[in-house]
Amino acid sequence: MPATAPAPGELVIITGMSGSGKLSALKAFEDLGYYAVDNLPVELIPRFADLVRQSTEIVKAALVVDVREGMSLDRFPAILKQIRKTVPTRVVFLEASDEVLVRRFSETRRPHPLGRAVSVVKAIRAERKMLEPLRNVADLDIDTSKFNVHELRAHINAQFDQGEKVGKNILISLMSFGYKNGVPAEADLVFDVRFLPNPHFVPEFRKLTGRHPKVARYVRHFAQTREFLDKTADLLQFLLPYYIAEGKSYLTVAFGCTGGQHRSVFIAEEMKKRLAQTGYRVKTGHRDMPR
Image (cartoon, rainbow, N blue to C red; front, side):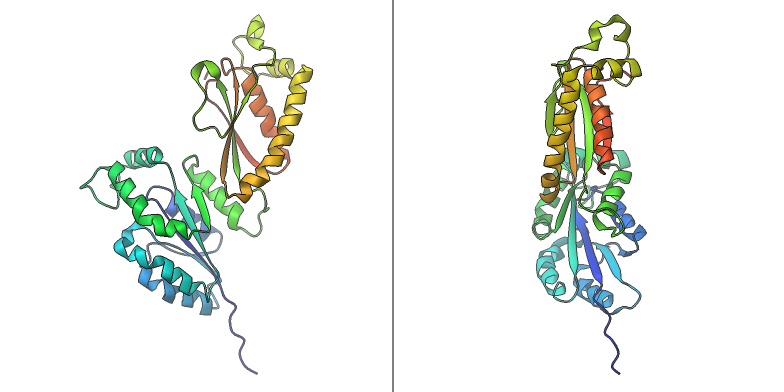
């Protein structure tokens, strides 16, 4: 009886901007049981793909390919087309804003892979241009600007762990802010809650925040508060699947009141409870709340 050929494995190729978290992503895949390889030369990818396809031990693998490959990156799209004929392959492209990447390089004090001869800003711009062919063939584009290491790993888990719930692979950041300090530039959706009665004008609440039970009870007491929460939660539940379908991995929803201390804080915290109950990953942040 002829031997059964091994089933094709799975290959994930991680690429993207330096400082975007590729090694953290690779570690997340390794924790999920992927055979992990960093900085594999582009020319060796077909051989590695054959190994994954033929191996009885390596069921799935992940590797990093990035700007360290230099001019070899030009051959990546053709190589990808070749290996996809034999092995199921997905390309994950990680990126972040220039501002965030510059800050990360500053914090780690590591030089950019393109060298010290140019500024980090110029190196980042050159790298974006070099990686454009890889980004154009990516199956998943993840902007890590607002992710910390733990959130990036959680997102990878949600996308690739077959044991995880699927369909809600997005991290929602609910932010409170005060209009007197301006609307946060990073907000994707902004809701103005200044129509709600203001606890600031109640003397005993003035120095408290929307996290205090007494303030929360006061704001929740009004019928318009409860109606706003119900309708806004319904709206977000409607929108989120469409954001996910478009590949969005992170959504910032901002709630603003006058000072960012009472109403917006309560609404953000209450909305977190509602969305978390439906299975979404949610966190809150309060930009202008007194510390």
